[in-house]
Length: 378
Ligand code: C5P
Image 1 (cartoon, rainbow, N blue to C red):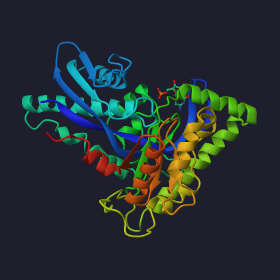
Image 2 (cartoon, protein in one colour):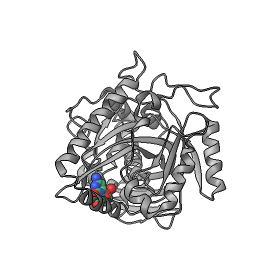
Image 3 (cartoon, rainbow, N blue to C red):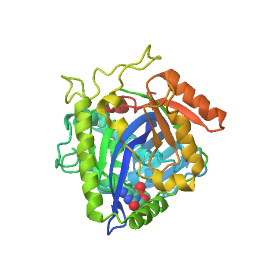
Image 4 (cartoon, rainbow, N blue to C red):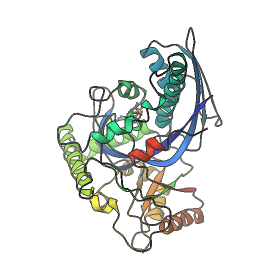
């Protein structure tokens, strides 16, 4: 029976870009946060004498060959373990392609999880008591136990991860490994070095999906031109990223309620209705909402002024229903606003609709929920 996996998107709670590296990538410091919006990835797989991968999608813009991240991830995994298989992957697209929400990267990990579960089932049938399919879902526990990154602590990488899939994921794309962790994740290097952060309480989020495409490589090139104009040196930008990473780690560590250090999102209240009155949000408690920014806005907004206008609609600054934070996600073109109440989120969606912009109401997804909600039960 095929396995269907939710492929959750991410937003960036701040994104800082450093100098270009000799390999053409840029150093980054960002906090990724997974959200409930998702695509659906369905995988069926059987061992076979040689590997064949068939990929389909409801969206004709999705490449169905080895340019597809899910295709690449599955091919790398099968090759690395020398386990040829016949694999079918269907991607039901609900998220925008190239939207800054990491949808393609998330598809890669959803396909990997689906593949592992499918092949575990076969192994279990052959070898009763063999490696269970829940092993992937237990990975969240490992991430929880990593705790708050201390300055200079090792990244969450192949050396301290119980499998080497993080390395494979980094080969597929810079923001693929974060989806092996989920929740709030500090991203460093080109984004592939990931540090699990203590999770914040879920918060209402409105994602705006403007019909505009932004090329990520072009946005990075525009950033380089801006830095050259402003005379920002590579050393100065590396210092800036180091400082920001420490500030992020301290802020998230400080936001965990007393006695919950290391326990991640356990005890997190479920947001199933509008909050009755003003309450402090965990995001405000971290202090990050007062200072985070996305460097890409400085190059993307001048080229797409409509996106700056959408940010203003999401923010509603100075009103009682103002966002706690509003920003471009990644290099865009998706933007998001975070809100204390469902009602505030609803009003933001209404403001977008009045301007003809599609907006979806969702919530941030802590690590334990990310893993618990991943499999679609059949
Ligand atoms: O790794 P990914 O495939 O997502 O990167 C797409 C492109 O974005 C890269 O080829 C590179 O041009 C640019 N990039 C970058 N620095 C990063 C991540 C991506 O310059 N940290």
